[in-house]
Length: 596
Image (spheres, rainbow, N blue to C red):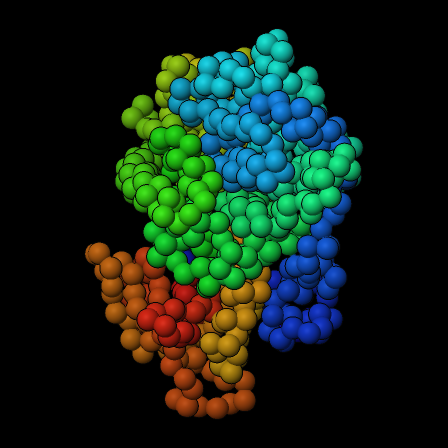
């Protein structure tokens, strides 16, 4: 594998084209890392200088617009003992941002700190007038509201608070609309004129920066009386969790934040709540990677906001001991199991709808450019997950709708690379006044509300808007690989190097390889035998060595029974994985697809 290696193209099961990633610079330009990792990084980084995980390489907080005004107002509240209420969103990003802000302010000797998260179904999204009323009913002494992971679109909610004499500091990472709320300060890397390096930083990432600015403001004012200010690095595990769970692109800034948080967890320094969530997920803290945060911890935290109250998740993250965190983590695990059952039923409904559409449109079998699905029996807290699943299957932007408690339809949108979903909704709103009651979000995900009678018109307008604005090439799904590995590179050592080299995630994908293998054994496992345990031997060796002399490796192919068949010689798409079992580490090939 080198810069001169020609890219090869294959077809994966399902018709997706598989192409090899080109190297952006020579692999040996990154010094001090193993050769395989250097080649993998050379296909992802813009330059060798981007491969850094040091906190000292983070951009200065002063580059975030509005942050000095925000720090000054929050510091005023701390010094004057004004009751502060942290107002968060009801997803994992909002929960971690809320917990981080509460913990940081407590560490900075704030005397009266509350938190409030609106109930998804009863109050809707964001700082709305009903949410302000609910907050003040619970905490009537509040003098300052600090929003986290929300607020940049909360014009009416901020006005409602200010009418009652309460200042609002907005900290958010979502795209602003044409107008901004009349807040005491607004901190958002996506504001016009922002000089901050990353526009992809999560809500908890913004909160981390804001708390750093507050700490410095209080230090300058002499608030700490000569004592050392609190170390905010101890909250980086929360930043890592919220950033990965929110599926924001892992650009240089986010990679530093996530990697530093993962190092704290692996060193045994995780907050008790995160340690308890790892425990109920069956994950060991000393081997945790970003995928564990995204697929094991994040969903358990998100489930509370989808089906119940995110207060349970925040209280878990705020726990000061593993003993108090464990029952809360178990409660989140139970809610997540319920969420999986609901999601499974909704997904079956949605797939049936798509199958019926294709059957009744035989003359035009291609799916529309944008897909809308709805059922009166769906749960509005789970539609985002359904939209995401259908997006992956159909490789189209998707909006999934469910009836809301107020009679309107609540939609959750998920998009594909190359289609900025919030911009699409903004365009629709401008061209069709009144079609969308309200919306907000960012490039890959958004939320919206429409009237039930508007669904047919919205469905057509949504598909037309995407077809009109998107490059047709974005609908041709492509899987990028890191090429073929020689049999000598398929080792446990390389698997462990790659596992901890990321952090891998959105827009910084985990290494993926392809190669030809002789399938020595294919044993169905799991309920229904849908998964397959494999024994795989590389079929070729560059030096001409006989395949019979090469090592045989364990493999696993989830939901791969139909694709793998009875075995034989197959070209496979796979990841190098480490199987941790009973204190022993073993190499395992995680098969993703069979290639034609």
